[in-house]
Length: 222
Ligand code: DC
Image (cartoon, rainbow, N blue to C red):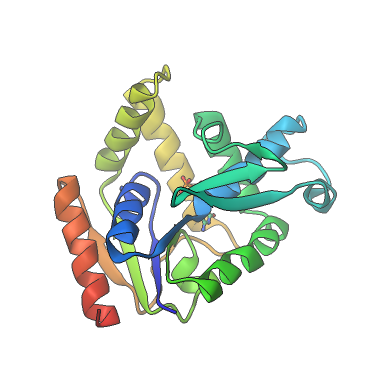
């Protein structure tokens, strides 16, 4: 099986580029951030805030997160509920970042991610795919862009979805989340030693997509 690990900070265009690249390659696309978001939503539903003053394992014992592919698209389920759309709010973003710093949560999601890569040609995006989840991935890419570029992209996405946010709020959230994601003790966001760094600052989508496909094809020899 061929596995492509794409890691990088929020808003670098990882998921859009990865989804399209996977389709082009005929691989399944796994958005691992969605798994952390679904876990974050569960903690929010249970009434906790980002302080997470609770027994994490007890909440996880009562959590069932699942990925299903419907018409080739990844959908994320919390229990029997498709929460794929519900997990795209700023509130869930902050909660996902908080729960993702908990070793219990990372352990809880690890095996599911590895299994998907064992059974399929996969393009998986996240923060620690090349460093922790799939250390033997065929291709590792660290996809990044300037904070302004990334905040701008996320801001436009949220506005398109009809959410009421300002650019400043999105930018501040982004910088805060970057800091937390890359400074946490466990599985911090950083490029794997053998990752190719792809900087998409100022790129049009098509340019970034072409760059990623070129790296994958060269490295995987396909
Ligand atoms: O990519 P995203 O914005 O959907 O990710 C949501 C949060 O989950 C983000 O703050 C970092 C965390 N995450 C992680 O720690 N490890 C991953 N493999 C994917 C996401």
